[in-house]
Image (cartoon, rainbow, N blue to C red; front, side):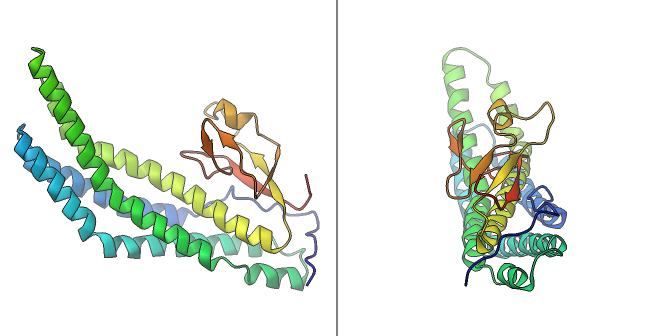
Amino acid sequence: MRKKKHRQGSVLSTHQRSKRAETQYRTSLSQVARKIGAIINQQYDGSNDSVLDIQQALADYSELIASWAKRVATKFVDTVSQDNAKLWQQNSREMSRELKQLIAQAPVGHVMQSIVYEQIEYIKSLPIEAADRVYDIQNRAIEAVVNGERPEHFTTMIAQSGQVAASRAKMLVRTELGRATQALTQARALAIGSNGYIWRTAHDGDVRHSHKQLEGQFVNWHNPPTLDGLTGHAGALPNCRCYCEVSFSDR
Protein backbone atom coordinates (compact mmCIF):
# COMPACT_ATOMS: atom_id res chain seq x y z
CA MET A 1 0.00 0.00 0.00
CA ARG A 2 1.43 3.33 -1.02
CA LYS A 3 1.69 5.85 1.81
CA LYS A 4 0.06 9.21 1.21
CA LYS A 5 1.66 12.49 2.10
CA HIS A 6 0.21 14.49 4.96
CA ARG A 7 -1.25 17.80 3.84
CA GLN A 8 0.15 20.96 5.34
CA GLY A 9 -1.84 22.16 8.32
CA SER A 10 -1.51 21.36 12.02
CA VAL A 11 2.10 21.00 13.13
CA LEU A 12 3.10 17.62 14.53
CA SER A 13 6.03 17.90 16.91
CA THR A 14 7.61 16.55 20.09
CA HIS A 15 7.37 19.97 21.74
CA GLN A 16 4.47 18.81 23.91
CA ARG A 17 5.71 16.16 26.30
CA SER A 18 3.71 14.09 28.75
CA LYS A 19 3.47 15.99 32.03
CA ARG A 20 1.79 12.95 33.59
CA ALA A 21 4.70 10.69 32.72
CA GLU A 22 7.25 13.26 33.88
CA THR A 23 5.56 13.74 37.27
CA GLN A 24 5.09 10.02 37.89
CA TYR A 25 8.63 9.13 36.88
CA ARG A 26 10.20 11.97 38.86
CA THR A 27 8.28 10.93 41.98
CA SER A 28 9.43 7.33 41.63
CA LEU A 29 13.09 8.16 41.07
CA SER A 30 13.01 10.65 43.95
CA GLN A 31 12.14 7.74 46.22
CA VAL A 32 15.23 5.90 45.01
CA ALA A 33 17.40 8.97 45.61
CA ARG A 34 16.10 9.35 49.17
CA LYS A 35 16.79 5.69 49.92
CA ILE A 36 20.30 6.03 48.53
CA GLY A 37 20.95 8.99 50.81
CA ALA A 38 19.57 7.11 53.82
CA ILE A 39 21.75 4.04 53.18
CA ILE A 40 24.91 6.13 52.86
CA ASN A 41 24.27 8.44 55.80
CA GLN A 42 23.31 5.58 58.12
CA GLN A 43 26.42 3.52 57.36
CA TYR A 44 29.23 5.95 56.63
CA ASP A 45 31.51 6.62 59.61
CA GLY A 46 34.65 7.70 57.76
CA SER A 47 36.23 4.26 57.66
CA ASN A 48 37.07 2.18 54.59
CA ASP A 49 35.02 -0.68 56.03
CA SER A 50 31.91 1.50 56.07
CA VAL A 51 32.51 2.37 52.42
CA LEU A 52 32.69 -1.33 51.56
CA ASP A 53 29.45 -1.87 53.50
CA ILE A 54 27.83 0.96 51.56
CA GLN A 55 28.94 -0.49 48.24
CA GLN A 56 27.45 -3.86 49.14
CA ALA A 57 24.23 -2.34 50.50
CA LEU A 58 23.70 -0.25 47.38
CA ALA A 59 24.48 -3.20 45.10
CA ASP A 60 21.88 -5.24 47.00
CA TYR A 61 19.39 -2.38 46.75
CA SER A 62 19.95 -2.15 42.99
CA GLU A 63 18.95 -5.81 42.63
CA LEU A 64 16.13 -5.50 45.15
CA ILE A 65 14.34 -2.83 43.11
CA ALA A 66 14.58 -4.70 39.79
CA SER A 67 10.94 -5.84 39.65
CA TRP A 68 9.74 -2.48 40.96
CA ALA A 69 11.88 -0.72 38.35
CA LYS A 70 10.19 -2.77 35.62
CA ARG A 71 6.75 -1.68 36.82
CA VAL A 72 7.81 1.96 37.03
CA ALA A 73 9.47 1.86 33.60
CA THR A 74 6.48 0.16 32.00
CA LYS A 75 4.06 2.70 33.44
CA PHE A 76 6.31 5.55 32.30
CA VAL A 77 6.52 4.29 28.73
CA ASP A 78 2.82 3.44 28.55
CA THR A 79 1.89 6.95 29.70
CA VAL A 80 4.28 8.62 27.24
CA SER A 81 2.90 6.46 24.42
CA GLN A 82 -0.73 7.18 25.33
CA ASP A 83 -0.19 10.93 25.47
CA ASN A 84 1.88 10.87 22.28
CA ALA A 85 -0.90 8.96 20.50
CA LYS A 86 -3.47 11.52 21.70
CA LEU A 87 -1.32 14.31 20.32
CA TRP A 88 -1.22 12.62 16.92
CA GLN A 89 -4.99 12.13 17.01
CA GLN A 90 -5.54 15.79 17.82
CA ASN A 91 -3.42 16.79 14.84
CA SER A 92 -4.86 14.27 12.38
CA ARG A 93 -8.11 16.04 11.49
CA GLU A 94 -6.86 16.86 8.00
CA MET A 95 -5.55 13.35 7.39
CA SER A 96 -7.36 10.76 5.36
CA ARG A 97 -8.90 7.71 7.02
CA GLU A 98 -6.11 5.61 5.51
CA LEU A 99 -3.41 7.71 7.17
CA LYS A 100 -5.21 7.66 10.50
CA GLN A 101 -5.25 3.86 10.34
CA LEU A 102 -1.54 3.80 9.55
CA ILE A 103 -0.83 5.96 12.60
CA ALA A 104 -2.99 3.75 14.82
CA GLN A 105 -1.23 0.65 13.51
CA ALA A 106 2.29 2.09 13.64
CA PRO A 107 4.76 -0.52 14.93
CA VAL A 108 5.61 1.11 18.25
CA GLY A 109 5.61 -2.09 20.32
CA HIS A 110 9.28 -2.89 19.80
CA VAL A 111 10.18 0.76 20.43
CA MET A 112 8.30 0.71 23.73
CA GLN A 113 9.94 -2.55 24.81
CA SER A 114 13.37 -1.13 24.07
CA ILE A 115 12.66 2.01 26.10
CA VAL A 116 11.33 -0.02 29.04
CA TYR A 117 14.49 -2.13 29.12
CA GLU A 118 16.69 0.98 29.02
CA GLN A 119 14.74 2.62 31.85
CA ILE A 120 15.08 -0.46 34.07
CA GLU A 121 18.85 -0.33 33.63
CA TYR A 122 18.95 3.41 34.30
CA ILE A 123 16.92 3.07 37.50
CA LYS A 124 19.09 0.23 38.76
CA SER A 125 22.23 2.21 37.92
CA LEU A 126 21.39 5.04 40.34
CA PRO A 127 22.52 3.12 43.49
CA ILE A 128 25.61 1.79 41.70
CA GLU A 129 26.62 5.27 40.55
CA ALA A 130 26.19 6.56 44.10
CA ALA A 131 28.36 3.74 45.48
CA ASP A 132 31.10 4.50 42.96
CA ARG A 133 30.94 8.17 43.89
CA VAL A 134 31.37 7.40 47.61
CA TYR A 135 34.30 5.12 46.84
CA ASP A 136 36.02 7.80 44.74
CA ILE A 137 35.48 10.50 47.38
CA GLN A 138 36.81 8.22 50.12
CA ASN A 139 40.01 7.66 48.15
CA ARG A 140 40.39 11.42 47.69
CA ALA A 141 39.88 11.89 51.43
CA ILE A 142 42.62 9.36 52.19
CA GLU A 143 45.00 11.17 49.82
CA ALA A 144 44.16 14.44 51.54
CA VAL A 145 45.07 13.00 54.96
CA VAL A 146 48.32 11.59 53.59
CA ASN A 147 49.17 15.05 52.23
CA GLY A 148 48.43 16.66 55.59
CA GLU A 149 45.10 18.15 54.51
CA ARG A 150 41.80 18.05 56.41
CA PRO A 151 39.21 15.56 55.10
CA GLU A 152 36.06 17.29 56.41
CA HIS A 153 35.18 18.64 52.97
CA PHE A 154 35.05 15.12 51.56
CA THR A 155 32.91 13.91 54.47
CA THR A 156 30.40 16.63 53.62
CA MET A 157 30.42 15.56 49.98
CA ILE A 158 29.55 12.00 50.97
CA ALA A 159 26.79 13.26 53.26
CA GLN A 160 25.29 15.04 50.25
CA SER A 161 25.03 11.82 48.23
CA GLY A 162 21.24 11.77 48.45
CA GLN A 163 21.04 15.28 46.99
CA VAL A 164 23.44 14.34 44.21
CA ALA A 165 21.37 11.25 43.41
CA ALA A 166 18.21 13.38 43.36
CA SER A 167 19.82 15.81 40.91
CA ARG A 168 20.95 12.92 38.73
CA ALA A 169 17.43 11.45 38.83
CA LYS A 170 15.88 14.76 37.83
CA MET A 171 18.13 15.07 34.79
CA LEU A 172 17.48 11.43 33.92
CA VAL A 173 13.71 12.00 33.92
CA ARG A 174 13.99 15.04 31.66
CA THR A 175 16.35 13.32 29.23
CA GLU A 176 14.46 10.02 29.07
CA LEU A 177 11.11 11.74 28.61
CA GLY A 178 12.59 13.53 25.61
CA ARG A 179 14.10 10.33 24.22
CA ALA A 180 10.90 8.34 24.64
CA THR A 181 8.76 11.07 23.06
CA GLN A 182 11.15 11.39 20.14
CA ALA A 183 11.38 7.62 19.54
CA LEU A 184 7.60 7.14 19.52
CA THR A 185 7.07 10.17 17.30
CA GLN A 186 9.69 8.87 14.89
CA ALA A 187 8.02 5.44 14.70
CA ARG A 188 4.62 6.97 13.97
CA ALA A 189 6.04 9.51 11.52
CA LEU A 190 7.91 6.84 9.55
CA ALA A 191 4.70 4.79 9.36
CA ILE A 192 2.98 7.53 7.36
CA GLY A 193 5.84 8.44 5.08
CA SER A 194 7.80 11.14 6.91
CA ASN A 195 11.49 11.23 6.00
CA GLY A 196 12.56 13.56 8.76
CA TYR A 197 11.85 16.65 10.79
CA ILE A 198 12.76 20.30 11.33
CA TRP A 199 15.01 20.85 14.36
CA ARG A 200 13.53 23.38 16.76
CA THR A 201 15.14 24.86 19.89
CA ALA A 202 13.69 26.41 23.05
CA HIS A 203 14.69 29.85 21.72
CA ASP A 204 16.28 31.14 24.91
CA GLY A 205 19.69 31.94 26.30
CA ASP A 206 20.23 28.44 27.70
CA VAL A 207 20.25 26.76 24.27
CA ARG A 208 23.67 25.25 23.57
CA HIS A 209 25.54 26.78 20.62
CA SER A 210 25.73 23.49 18.73
CA HIS A 211 21.97 23.01 19.09
CA LYS A 212 21.22 26.60 18.12
CA GLN A 213 23.07 26.08 14.84
CA LEU A 214 20.57 23.37 13.88
CA GLU A 215 17.49 25.55 14.41
CA GLY A 216 15.27 25.31 11.32
CA GLN A 217 17.40 22.61 9.69
CA PHE A 218 15.93 19.43 8.16
CA VAL A 219 17.16 16.22 9.81
CA ASN A 220 16.59 12.77 8.32
CA TRP A 221 15.18 10.25 10.82
CA HIS A 222 17.85 7.78 9.78
CA ASN A 223 20.75 10.21 10.12
CA PRO A 224 20.77 11.87 13.56
CA PRO A 225 23.41 14.59 13.99
CA THR A 226 26.43 14.41 16.27
CA LEU A 227 26.66 17.38 18.63
CA ASP A 228 29.42 17.89 21.18
CA GLY A 229 30.48 14.28 20.73
CA LEU A 230 26.98 12.83 21.21
CA THR A 231 24.71 11.49 18.46
CA GLY A 232 20.97 11.86 18.69
CA HIS A 233 17.82 13.60 17.51
CA ALA A 234 16.32 16.80 18.90
CA GLY A 235 15.17 16.25 22.48
CA ALA A 236 16.90 12.89 22.75
CA LEU A 237 20.28 14.18 23.92
CA PRO A 238 21.11 14.68 27.63
CA ASN A 239 19.22 17.62 29.12
CA CYS A 240 18.14 18.75 25.65
CA ARG A 241 14.97 20.85 25.38
CA CYS A 242 14.94 20.96 21.58
CA TYR A 243 12.17 19.19 19.71
CA CYS A 244 11.27 17.62 16.38
CA GLU A 245 8.75 19.31 14.07
CA VAL A 246 7.65 16.43 11.85
CA SER A 247 8.17 17.12 8.15
CA PHE A 248 6.59 15.45 5.14
CA SER A 249 9.04 16.98 2.74
CA ASP A 250 12.29 15.43 1.54
CA ARG A 251 14.24 18.39 2.92
